Length: 145
Image (cartoon, rainbow, N blue to C red):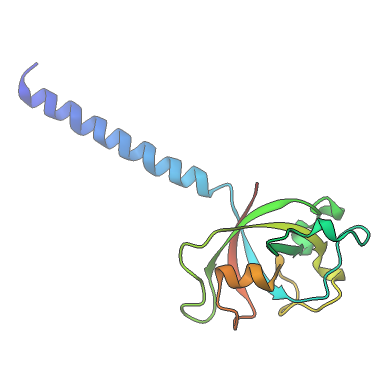
């Protein structure tokens, strides 16, 4: 094969590899949902009963909004969550991805969330891990794990 053909084949292979790479990124992110998150503080009550062992020792937990509550099936589910934007610039902490456990229903929490009607109400600890604590509402990307 003349040298010119080898170069042409390697360019096509490189283009194919780039296409596969970009498709893998697109497919990976297409499994995530987008929503909003607020935060809340104590007192915290678990989904069912008063068993404090339902709460992770890391305090990385949340209450489920109606969109993910799923008639209580969300209780105990784990989600990866990251802040993607907010009304105020520089609210999100870049590159921070957290894992939280759903421990309650947002609509029935004892303490009020910073904003009603969100996808998730994160514990203050979880919220501060991905966003500035002074914000009351952030836009999030989340995925069940």
